[in-house]
Image (cartoon, rainbow, N blue to C red; front, side, top):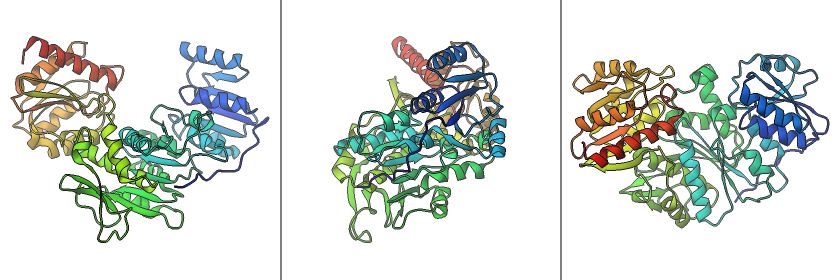
Length: 479
C-alpha cells in the first residue's frame, strides 16, 4: 500500500494571504491560515446579512474581511486561496496574474498542509456519480479494516481531514472540476474519471477546458489511472497524463473485461487487472445483486470504486463486503414505494441530461417526470436514446418547453402532460398525472435532467416533495 508524497512545509508566519469568498470552504481556509500565523484578508462579492454575520465572526478572531469588493487585489498579497465557485475570469484573478501571485484552491491548500505521515489519497471525479463512488470506496476500505473517510467535494472538508487529530490510512476524495482547476500540485496515489458530459461550461468556458481540468486528477498518479471503457474521453485523458513510472491504465466496463480491466461476467463483478497472469485469470469480486440499486450506472460506480480499492491492495472479500454494506444517499435512484403495481423512483439528483440518461436506462417502461432549470442544456439526444422506454411524460418547471419540443420531435407517440404551475402542489399533481398514465409493471421516475431552483430550494427538497406526493397517493389508493 502506498504512502503519500508530502510537499515541503511552508513558513506561513506573516505571509499575506487573500482568501476569495466566504462560504463552506473559504471560512475554514481563513481560520486555518490565520492559525498558522498568516496575515489573512477575506474578500467577498456579497454584502448581505449572512455575509456580515460571517464577517463579524472572523473579524472577532483577528481576520480582516472586505465585503462587496471581490475584484480588487489587497495590497501586498503574496497568495490567493479561492473557494471553488469563483470563476477563473474573475477580475481578482486577472489582477493576481498581472502581479505574479499564485492562486490555490482549498484542495491545494489541504495538500500543501499535509504532515510527514499523511494518508495517501484515492481520488474520484466525473460529471456524474462522484459522491456515490467515493462513498462506495470508503465502505470498501472500511471493510478492509482501514481507517478512512469520504472527503472533499462530498461535504467533509479536506482541511479538517488533513489537520484533524484523527489519523487515517487512506482518504477517499471527491474532487470537482472547480477544485481540480485550482489544484496544480496535487499528486494522488490513484484516481478515476467516471465519465464526461457537458456541464459547468459557463464556468470553464469550453468542453475542452472542462475536460482538461478533470484530467488533472491523473497527473502524477502512482499506481492506477482508472477510466471508463465506454467513455473514450476518459481514456484519452489517461494517455495525456504525466504519471509516475509503473502507473497503469485500468479500465472498467459493464461488459466482459479484457486484461487490465474490471467488468461484469454472468452477473459477477470481476477483476482482470490486479491478478497474477491477467491474460488468463480473473478474480471474482462481488455479485451484481450485492450493489444497491443494481442499475447499470451504479454498477459502473461500483467497478470504479473496486478498481481504486484494488489499486490500494484491498482483497476481494473486502470489496464484496463493502459493496453489500453500502447504501446510496437519498434522491439517487431511490425506491420510494410501489403503489398498485407501479414502482415510484426518486432520482432528483439527476440534475443534468447525462445523469437522467443513466437513470432512464435502468427502467422500462417509464412514466418520466422531468423539467426545471435547463442551464443551457438541450434534450434531443436524451429523448432519442430513451424514447422506446417511455410510456408517458409529465413536465414541470421553467424550461419544460425544451423537453416538450424534444419529445415532439423524437417521440411524438408518447403522451405528454405539461403542468403550467410552480406552486407547492405542482409535484403532487405531477405524481397524480404520472399515476394516471402508468400501468402495473411500469416505473414512475423522477429524473428531471434539470436543476431544481426554479421551484425548490435544492434537489433534496424536490425529491422530498415527490416522495411525499407518492406516499399521499399510496394512502388514498388513488392510482
